[in-house]
Length: 125
Image (cartoon, rainbow, N blue to C red; front, side):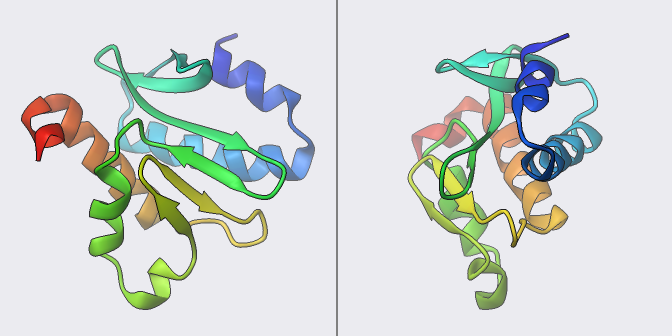
């Protein structure tokens, strides 16, 4: 069992359902991902680089796209209603358990991060 699987097993059932769903959407979007760790967190890796980590904290679910650019880039492409569903700052996207991110927002996060991994010059913008 990999590190993401181990982490999921450690969560309470309601938390596991939401966190696992985010990871499932990522795996559907990028089937060749591998499990690993980055910054001490269980993460999915794309081409050996950290793609995303999803962690349950005391107050929310946090998505770490391992990029300061991705949260703002994704938020810029959303409607006001979509943007209201989560909070973000440099490197972190947060949402509440009872208000999960829509799958299309998760896919947008993944697409932005995959683009960065595939073209490192995007990180320098």
